[in-house]
Length: 278
Ligand SMILES: [Zn+2]
Image 1 (cartoon, rainbow, N blue to C red):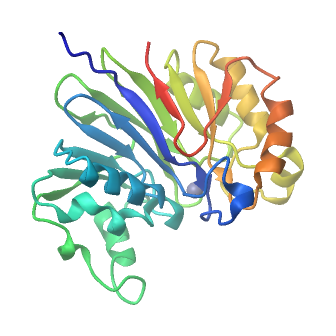
Image 2: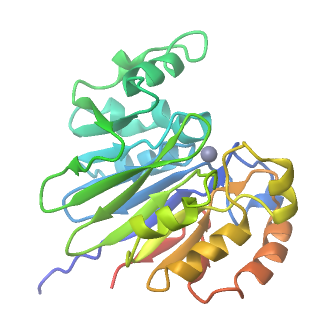
């Protein structure tokens, strides 16, 4: 029998800001940003929010020795908090590359070292296995990956900046754009251009219109702005992502029952949602 492998995306954390604790959040999930692309020869991970900890447990439990590439978009806590709890970093049989963006001319490793040092964290990154590599990249450039997999990057307006990634090969094509504010009139159009004809885009969907008015400068999009983006990306599934931590299941369902009717290519991420490629 010929074994067929299906590349897929798995959401390990769909929250933004803080993990959401309590049963009233369990439908959409508790953990912060982490999306996993599983391919036949490699695991790719986008952001290391608290969701990455459970992914790490699964990789170890499955005895999965495939190399792992982790892409960090920016260094706010909700996107890196899970990193030192990612079990494969302590297993020297698993080769791990961690790709770090240079943001505002500061080396990524410098930003990460601030977090991975006392008093914020008890240990520094020397606790990770010797098979861990840190690779800096300039936002806007393409990251050089092997096996005909390409990763384009784009700078996103956000306090301290953020990075959008477009990963594509013959077998998959998606965009991961976690935190972004429409600071310029062209921001939504710029994201649409970068994402043109991709199959999926994970996009920051944090606020109602009313909330956005009170949170200018906080670095996030409103549902209406995501609807505008979806209308420009008719060939893509636009995935509502980065749910604010204070938003209960009931509140999110009420909001989404309206939002999802506005464009038929909108969909929503929950923790453990899976998406396959055609
Ligand atoms: Zn965030």
